[in-house]
Image (cartoon, rainbow, N blue to C red; front, side, top):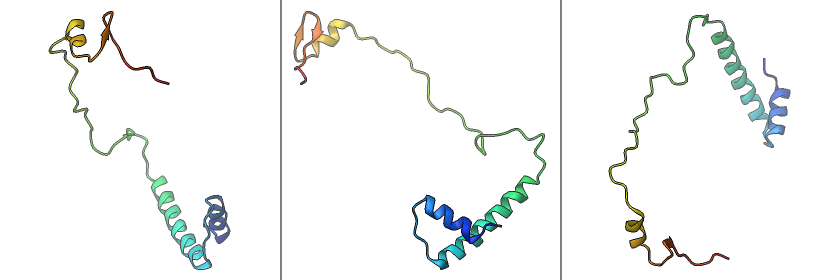
Length: 93
């Protein structure tokens, strides 16, 4: 059973200030959660395959396909400033 001292300790670690009422309330709630987890641990899962998601998930992204490759000359033609076949940009300080 989760006691009040356990709740106080966790609250201290989380830097939470709880009232006595909250400590009592959270103690009961955490105890119920622990009981449910213990109940789930009793289920035999030896032949159950682990799954990362409850439903199958598929990647909906398509493969990248090159439809048109721009030449260097085409790319440089769009540059506001060009020098010796390279983009010319302002110096960054």
